[in-house]
Each structure stands twice: as C-alpha cells, then as structure tokens.
Image (cartoon, rainbow, N blue to C red; front, side, top):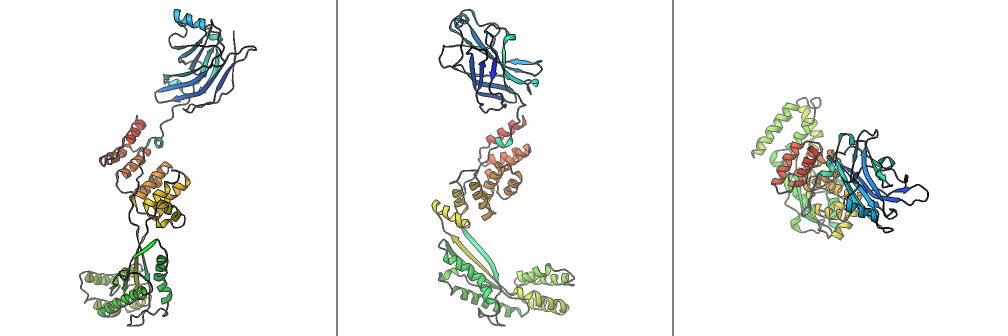
Length: 496
C-alpha cells in the first residue's frame, strides 16, 4: 500500500526550543495511516547536530504482518550528500515475532529501534539521535524518510521536511559570564552640608544685625536649611560649625580679633533660634585673613585685567608659606607691598575681590533615621535621599530583578551615593546585563577592588575578547576568595 504524506506545519528553526506538532497523514482515500511529530528539536553544537522528537503513534495503523519505518535524514538540496540517523521501526504483532526470530530487515538493521505497535492503544516514542558535524551540514535539510509499505523499497518512501540546518551559533559571552552583586552593609547615614553666607558687619563691629544691608537673605542660607532639618522627624542635627574669614586690608591682629568675634557672634545668633542641644553648635573658628580666597581669585584673572598678575601671585604665595609656618608678622608688610607697588591693581582687588573674601562658612552635619523595610518603601516614594545604600537595596529587592522599577532604584542609589563602591558595582553589573559595556566601565572605575569588582572587570574583558586581562583579573578575584569557575569556563568555551 502506498500512501502520500501531507505536512500541516513546515516552519522550524534550528534551536533547542520545542516546536508545535507536525502531522503526517496518509492521503490515499480510505487509509488511516497517521503519525504526529511533537516537541521537535534540532540543535547544533560545535561538534554535533542533534535531532529529537516525539513520534505520537496513537492513530497509526500497522497490520499484524507489516511494519512502518521512519528515518530522519540530513541531506543537501542537490542530493549529493546524505547522513541517515537511527530508524524507528513500528511493527505489527506477527512482524515483530519475525524480527525477533530472524532479525531486522537488513536495510535498517545497522541502526534502528524496533517498537511493537499495540493496536488502537495510545503510544508515543521519544526519539533522539545525532551525527558528527560535516562541512556540508550547513544549509542542509532534515527530513523524515517514511517507509509506509514496509517493503524496504526506498524509492516508494515519502519524505517529510522538518528543518533546514544553519551554522552553529557562536556562544554569546553575555550568556556565559557570571556576575556577582554585593549586598551592601548598613552604615549610619551621616551627611554634611556646606555653604557660605556673606554677612555684612558694621565697620570694626561684630554684632549680627539681621536688617543691615543684605543680611536677611544671607542669614536665610543657614536658617532655611536648619528649619527643614528641625521640622523633619527623620533628621537629627549632629553639629553646626561656623568659620569666619576676613579680608587682608587691615592689620593682621585686628583682622584676627574681628574674624573670631564675628564668627562667635554669628554662632550665638543662630543657636538662639533653635531648641537644639547646646553641644550641637561647635565653637566658632576663624581665619584672620583670607589669602587663600585672594589667590584663587587672582589665579583666574588674565594679565589684561591684572597686568602684574604673576608678581602679585608670588607675593601671595609668600604670605601663604609664612602662615603655613605660623609666621604671621610678615603678612601686613607683604599686603602693604602689593598696595604700594601696584596701586591701580590693588584698588581693583579691593573693590571687586575683597568683599567676597569676608564670608562666614557653615557646615551642618546630620543623620537620617534608620527605617524598617515598610518605612523605607514609603520614604523612597517621597525622599529617597534619606535612605542608606542598604535600605535602597532592600527596597529594590521587593521588586522583580531586572524590571524597570528595580533598575530605577539601583540607578538612583548611585545618583544619591555617587562615590559608593558597592552602589557603583551593582549598577555596573546591571549595565553589563543590559549590554551597556561603556557605562559599566565608567561605573567600575568607582567600584573599588573587591573580589566582586575584579570579577565584573573580568567579565567586561571577556566581552571585549581581552582574555589575558580577564584571566589576570580572575586570578586576583580568586585570591580574594571568590569562586570564578564560571567565568573561567566562559573563556574556555569562547576560545576553543
């Protein structure tokens, strides 16, 4: 009996993903020869081509004295090359007895599996076989040769197309590399704010007058910051320190007295505005003459503005050198020398630079509270900067790793803590997983030298095919106790 085959599904790609079923149906009227192929898989490695499928035989009719044979074949389009795989023989009851007594049909005996067909019973055969790769395999087709007459006449076989082979896909380094995130340790969230207020004092006086000149707005630079902190129950102010600076145009000892008293006066003024412990306000500090600020200003000027810029810088450097050795009795003489030698330029500095040298720097140190996970999740929605690196990590891991929400938290952690090694490492690992190597390399510059950071740098080197550098980094990571087996295996697979 000759039967033709109708294949209801032809599309297939050579991957390991299971495919929908292919139904092989006898087309001759009145026949019920049917086989369904399910879970079809064709896989290419660098050495072998593997074919696997389930032959569902539930509707296959095999007369007692006959057999059906199904042979997967790899064949070029021109028929010049062919590789036959293991044959599945499905035999009827009597034919099975003959095979057991006399042996399998010589056409198939070298490589076959004989299966007894139990009439009208559900039956599935899990098929798997493969062959060593040959140069001609690329673009060859995979068929099933179907001998439905059981006569061994290959000319009468039907051919069912399964797939076209493509060259083995080279391993993707991103699928092979191993990245290790670091769970941050929890540390106290100590912060510091620094600013400068330009308080104007009456000549030779040190009393703070809020309504004098522009003092009201300058004082708000300090008080507005403290107002927010004092009102927030999650903030504890640890220390407020004020440092006063005077300009160099008066005698040094006089400037010293003014700077110290003005810094103390400003500290006392601010402390009286808040009900904070007395020890929060540190003793005021002062620098009698702000030669550092003067030098910074002159350094930025050109010689058109300050023709004797080089000479003035030299005299300023001399004063700074003296002060660094606690020699202050020469400052007045050197300041007078600048005024006498370069009167026009001195007047320019006196008018445009000296006012800015008279300032009050303030440093406010404070802590944020520690939060439970539930509290941290709520704080994150409004004030994520109040969370520690560990608290942000914990919030992120209430979300699906790799989701947009998770990625946002990992990114924000670096935005808030740009110099934290662990935050930079974890974001670098995320960037690598997203195949953004350039971003990862930038972040790894701040990731420190932990074993995990060395491993991440090795992963980048693997991606860039810099295998010697990758091995060097993996050696260093291993010495610090990290298991780098997976990345060593990645190098082996990518270089063999």
